[in-house]
Image 1 (cartoon, one colour):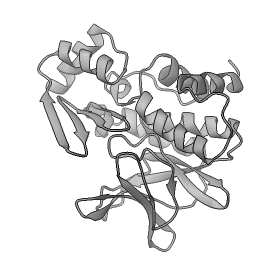
Image 2 (tube, rainbow, N blue to C red):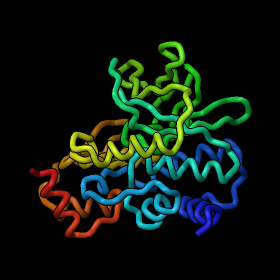
Image 3 (cartoon, rainbow, N blue to C red):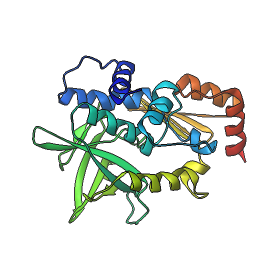
Image 4 (cartoon, helix red, strand yellow):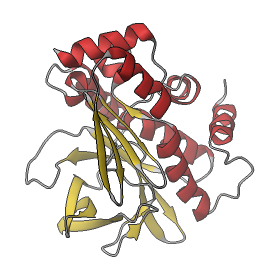
Length: 267
């Protein structure tokens, strides 16, 4: 299947076909992607082969609805943006969760310029991620869940994507405006889904960012997060796990896979 055809199918899946390529399309791409295609470590936990070519990403995320994480979701988004004429730039980032640490480059994002302003396009960060293009400015922007995101420069040449929480800005990850390519993504991706100490190899992490709520599964705890609070439920068996993955996240797994996932994270 040609890239143009896959992008048309992707846009149809999000009901964004026949749209003008303006900023409202960029905004809707992010919001509808994170509300439709689950962020998911299912493939990593099951030990699946996870290639990063565009057709494999399209088949896995859009057609098979198996979900994925940043190298998959943002890899798919990069191709979509490029096909639509937005000329994205690839960057890699270090996930730090507001700590002064120096982890590996295990997060992928895209940046686009529109009408003289630059925006971070990130549809692959999970439950804390944005539902909007995040402007490269200290003023930031607020999404439909009333979450304020911004990009700040804490040190020269070092940019942080931050969310306002608990009355302060919280740094999710940092990046530099260096040159990266597909080979860099392959390295970070290999670590993220193959290294025995990697988060996604050891934990089940699934999320959808809806307009009014965030659905989040962390191992055997399912949470629905809204502006009024958090409602959590313990997952007690593989049947319940499978029902959540399919029914609440649209992440297609079989009964046998649900049993394997439950046994793995229960251990």
